[in-house]
Image 1: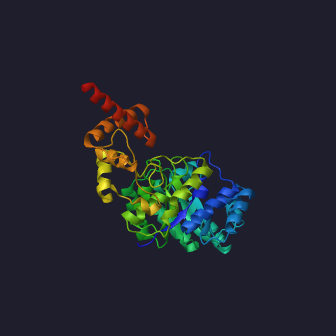
Image 2 (image 1 turned 135 degrees about the vertical axis):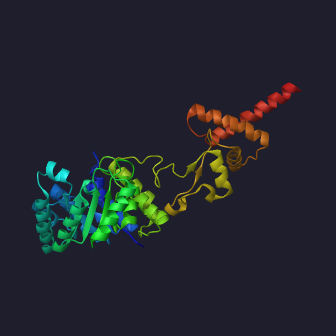
Length: 382
C-alpha cells in the first residue's frame, strides 16, 4: 500500500477521555487545525448526545473543510436519526460483535445483530449517508462472524468495516494476522481503531496497515478513553519512516496542533511524549552529545526538522567534556583541558544537588569561582 487514510477521532473518542470537554470554539479550532494539516477524515462527534452537540457538528460542517466528516452512532434508529441532523456525510454505525458484549451488554445474539446491521445500513444509505460498520470489541470476537456481519453490511451498502480493539488487548503480531484474514475475505475498506491499554496502540495500528488496513483511527496526543488511542503524530511519522507509507499530512504542523489539543483538553503532554513532548529531542549523556556534535546521524533516528523542531543539548550529571567546551564557547570562553575537567566536576555536583541543568549565569559563576580558586591556590603556593 502506498497510502493510508487517517480518520482522526480527537473530537469524538478523544473527548471521551474522562474529564475532557471541548467547548464549541475549541472543537472548531481543532477541526480547522486537523484539516489544515491535511487530515482527510474527521470523526467530529456523537449526534445522540443532544442538540448542542449537533449544533457544533453542523457548525464544523458549515466551515466547508476539505475533510470528510463522520458521526459516531450506536446501531439504533434514534442515533441514526440524530446523525441525519448533524451535517455529516458518513456515519460509523457501531455495535458489539463479540459474543461477550452481545450477551452481557445488549442481551442479544448474533442473529439479532445481523438483522439490525442489514436494516440500519440500508436506512442510512437511503438517507444519503455513507456507512462504516463499527465492530465494537472486534479483538475478542469470532473472526468468521466479523466476516459474516461485514458481508451483510456490504450487501446493504456499507463501504467500510472498522475493527475496534475496544479494550486494548491486541498485540501487533495478532493484529497483523487478523487484518490479513479480513483483507483476504472481505472486499471492503478496513479501518483499525486501537486503544493503548498496554502501550501498543501505535504498534497495533502499523501492524494492521501491514495486514491490509486502508484507514486508521487516531487522536492528537493519543487522547482517548482510559490509556488513550493511537496518536496521530506517532502514526503519521511511523507510517512514513517505518513502512514507507504516505498519509499526506503536513508534519510541520503537528507540534502546534498538539499544543492546541493539550490546552483544550487540560491534559498536559508528557515531557518525553514521542514526537511532540518537550524533551524528546533533548540530549545530555556525554556519549550521545559527542556523537551528535560529530555527525547528527550517529544518534538521530528521527530528524526533528521534519516536525519543525531541533535538537537541544543540555549540561548535567551525564555530560562529557565535549559538551562543556561547546557550552562555554557559546559564552565566548575557550577552555583549557584542565579547566574543562574542573568545570565538568562542578556541573555534575550542581545537577545532582539542584535536579536541573545549569543556565548561562550558573556557568559564568562556575567559571569565576574556578578562576578565583586557581588564583588563590597559585598565591598560596608562591
